[in-house]
Structures are given as structure tokens and as C-alpha cells.
Amino acid sequence: MKKIPLVVKILIGFLLGTILGLSLSAFCDAETVKKIVSYISPFGTVLVAMLKAVVFPIIVFSLVSGAAKLPLKRSGKVGGIVMLWYFATSLFATVFGVALAYLLNPSISGAANLASANMASAAEISGGTTSGTISSLITGLFQNPFAALSNGQFLPVIVFAIAFGLAARSIMDSLPEDSEIAQEAKLLIKVLDGAQHISFRLIDWVVCYFPIGVFALSLTNFAVNGSLLFGPYLRITGCVIVCVFAMIFFVYPLAIFAFCRKNPYKVLLQIKDAMVTAFVTRSSAATLPVSFRVMDNMGVDRTLSGFSLPMGSTVNMDGVCVHLPVFVILAANMFGHDLSMLQIATLCISIIFASIGAGGIPGGSVFLLFMVLESMGLPSDQVTLVVALALGINPILDMFETCCNVTGDNVCTYIVAHNNSLMTPQPKN
Image (cartoon, rainbow, N blue to C red; front, side):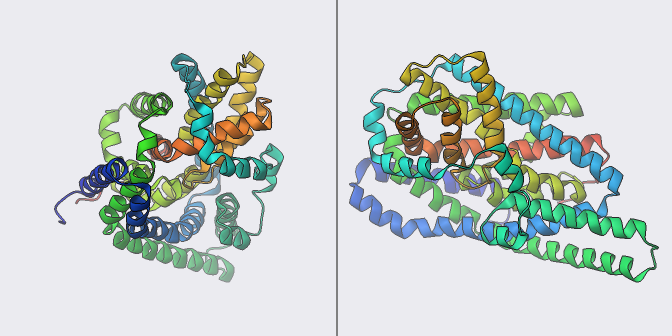
């Protein structure tokens, strides 16, 4: 088994789970499916739970260590490049998604009947999603990091970890090397480095469980949603998948070739483990450990990946940016709204800032759809209907969307490393 590549084992687990899940959905009644899923789903839930258990330690240790090891001037430059890249790709993905959505012109028949099963959940989401302003986003960055940690909020923890690492670096640069305070700062960073290595050993153990967890996740997903995912939703599914595939197999390769002069598809092949993991777990945060391993194997300096990947898992949501426009144009088609250029520009800005709050969790984009639709001026009943439609198909779309998000994180990290002398020799297997 050790000789079989991880990605092959994951794909086998995914395909077996998908086939069995679709078979259960097609040939078994709802009660039987529910009973079987109740036995299988915990094996998938435990995989995501194990990955998430090590996400926060890795974020904190990696960001503090990475920020502390780069000189302040260089850290600011590289960090600025990473953030500029993330903003640029989010903007491009949004405009690209809007253009493709207009071109593909999504529509759906029997929308009210399809949405009826999810109307209660959609109303709850719509009623509870009220703080999506830019000011609330900015103020949310600065919270008690321990409270944010307990609530599963990524951005405040990231801000604190970067500031903590930069403060440690400032002490080491401003004080004599042999001073007691400078030595204490160095010792603390070494301790955090050790904790980071221990966290990665935990990941090595978790990886061994991947095929089983992936099998359970895919079986559960398709057993519960299979009959819905391949029916009237087919055109919407096709629109989102076309947008995502265009980003992954055209836009990102073009960027890799333009900035690195490398064969982009060979680079994507090296990123495949992270892409597949994101696809099956539907969580950018849960995929972080695998992304770190991928970047290490590609020779990317940990001082960069330790900053870029955790930041990207939270703020870089290209998949969200190409996914949301499809439902916005769907809403415009359903309710006869003609969007003006000003409304389209407002839509793009809303999507970009909403995507920053997606949080790297499964299904996070559904919670953002309400804010984006509200920015169009749709009445609450129409917003609730569209959100209910999205809930019905979200499990399958979220897989493609998250794969796009994580691919963007890794591509950005690789390009920045390649162009800023932050590549180290790749270890031999």
C-alpha cells in the first residue's frame, strides 16, 4: 500500500464512495439511505475533524515562525506581493465569473418546487446574516485571539500571529544579539518551530487515514444528494463547473507560464494532492496541512508558505468569486432584473469582500450568497428562494469551488516563491 501514491488512493476511495452513494440514492428508499449513511458518515466526519484539529496550531506556529524569520523590510515586501496577488486573482475571478455567467445564461425550471425542501433553512440563513459590511470585516480582524480560536474564526488569529512574529523579529533586530531579551525571543521562535514540526508529524499520521475518510465523505454526499445533483440542477451545475475549470486549467496555468516560464501543467500535477483533498473535504482550512506538504515537496521556503497558505485559506476564495455570480445571474433571469453597469460593479465589489469572510469552512459560500443578493436590491422572499435553491445543490458545487480556492493558494505561493528567491532544493523521495 505504501508504494501506491496518496492521490491514487484518495481517488479510488472517492470513486468507490461516489458509485456506492449514487447506487444507494437510486435503488434504496430514503429511510434505508438514512440508516446506512448514519453508520458510514462518522468515518468521513472524523477525517475533517482530525484535519481541523491541527489547522489552528499550524496556522499560529507557521505564521509566527515565518514572520519572525524574514527581515522586516523583506517581510513587508513579500507579504504585500502575496496580498496583492490574492486581491488581483479575486477581482479577476469575479469579473471572469460574471462574464461567463452572462455567456452561459443559467436558468432553472420548477424553482419553487425544488427550493421548497430548503426554504426553512434558507430563511434561517437569510435572517441571521446581517453583518457583511466592510467596517464589520475590518473591526473583526482585531479580537481576542483566544476567543477567536474557540469560536473557529481565522482572520483574528492570523492577524495576531503575524503581529506577534513581526514583534519578535523587531526585538531580535533592534537589540544586541547577546542581550537577554533577544535571546529569549530567539528561544521562543525555536520552541514554536519545534511545535510546528510536531504538528506536521501528526499530519503524517492523519494522511494514512485519508482513503477511508474520503470514501465515507463521498458516499454520504452522493447517497443523500445524488438524485438532486443530476436532475433539474444540471444546467446550474454545468455553469459553475465550467467557470471553475476555466480558472484551474486556463487562468492559473497562464499565470504560471507568464510569471515563471514553467510548464504550468507540470506544476499543477505537483499540486494535485492538495487539489484532491480540497475537493473531497470541501474545506480550505482542512486542506492546509496537505498544502504545506505540497509546497515543501516543491521546494518553497517555509517562511513564505507559512504566511501565504494560512492567509490564502481565509482571504483567497477564487472559487467563491466564480461561483456566486452564477446564482446572481440566475436570480436576475428568474425575477426579470436587468442589471446596470453600476449594479454589476457593485456586485463585483460585494463578492470580493464577501469572499474574504468565507472562512475556509465547508459550505461557507452559501452564507455569503444572502449578502450578495441583498446588494442587488432583491426583496427578502426572492433572496430566500435563491438561497434555498443554492442549498439544494451546494454540496457538489462546494467541492469544485474549494478545489479552485486551494489551487489558487498554492499557485500564488509558488509564483511568489519563484520570483523572490524563496525556493530551496527539492528533497529527494
